[in-house]
Image (cartoon, rainbow, N blue to C red; front, side, top):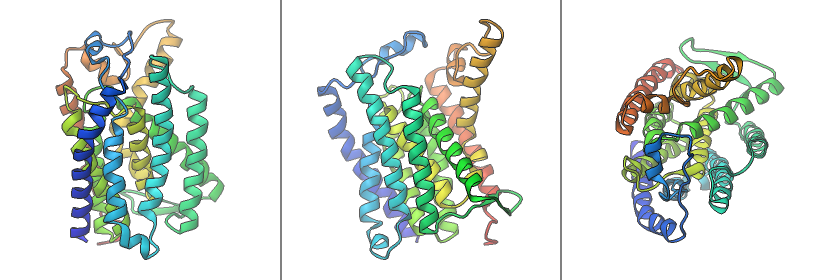
Length: 330
């Protein structure tokens, strides 16, 4: 299986790099540039006009890997990687619509919060039902570290699953605020999923996880500070969908608690800031939320934010791996 995963990584990486040399100039010609919020760090204003919707780059690479490296699995009737891709693509389309509205309005607002929430909720429920029907998911909740499985009623599980998916996807989206940040944070997560799929003999999920790793590694070449392209909501929603879909297709959504800890911290910082601002009538806990902007306003460079947050993600990914590696006593 090692060769299959390696092929998934390299096909996705190579196609993504090739796609970048086509997509980035195309985005420039079409004047699909990022709009920057005026209440953000003033040094971000220099990013105005940087091509957005760059998530199309790694989406191309990952799609190519699924339909080439994963073709035999599809022929054999194993569809987990295809189901994950379709789910993630639908989230990517939601993000694309949001990005398109921003470009069309020449502003920083696209779809309304209600529109995004409802679309994401419907897709999440449909995906969980599909995984259940295909046999990749049980209504039993696996608890990492404790190595126990807790049975819960299916309706409760579906509500829980929808909450986790929508919450995680939006947490990934919130984290995408500094050059390379969400890309760097997500690579260790993708590697953890690849290791899990490899250890447990789940080749189809492994192909997708390896392709995600390869696509993100390629994208980071162009997304690292100073970014030549921004993934936009097209990429961040697709990426969030991929991370959630891998967790659920491997039947271990609770692993997202340690594995996606950086995303959780980012989201909590935003929630804390908003609540405290309202309760204290204008006071703030952080200089700016989400928390990566707080560190920027404290004097950290974007590269330092990227480095520290990526290392943090690596640490929590290792912790997550320790919590699941004995799941099947291998």
